[in-house]
Image 1 (cartoon, rainbow, N blue to C red):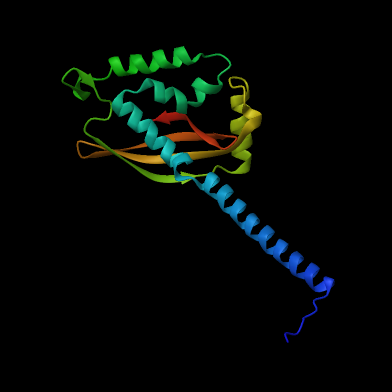
Image 2 (cartoon, rainbow, N blue to C red):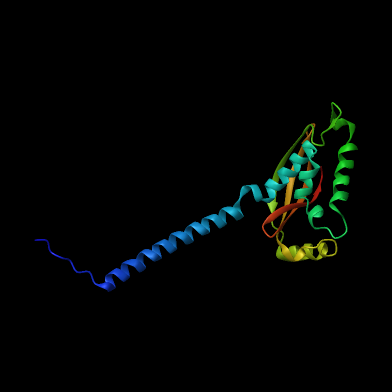
Length: 180
């Protein structure tokens, strides 16, 4: 004859609570991992947005330039059409030494290497937000600012360039680029 085993209700309750804690812990770990991947996403970083900017210049993709342009997305005084026209003029008036087969390639014969990406000090970030406040709508939603330094190697000569990337509620935009 088989013996019956008696399990108290407190043991069952303790077992269920123990498993709920394990499930909750696993869900928490999974949620944390998803959030980290969303914020650390290499496709949404200052360097990747800068590289997209370079790709857009190379391919003359004004539409994609507008999508990553801080000015085109948030300006109080400039319309996206004006920004697009400015890029169009830049493409069409590029120096003849960058033309090949009638196509303008602003980056022809260049190699660009990012040398540094740094976060300005908090006081500098406050100053940047203040200076942007007159021209741009979203200065209250800026979550980060990064300054990108890069080398431009053209015909054996190296020059320096800089870019400013601005993060608005988790998405990076290119604001200023000089040297190209």
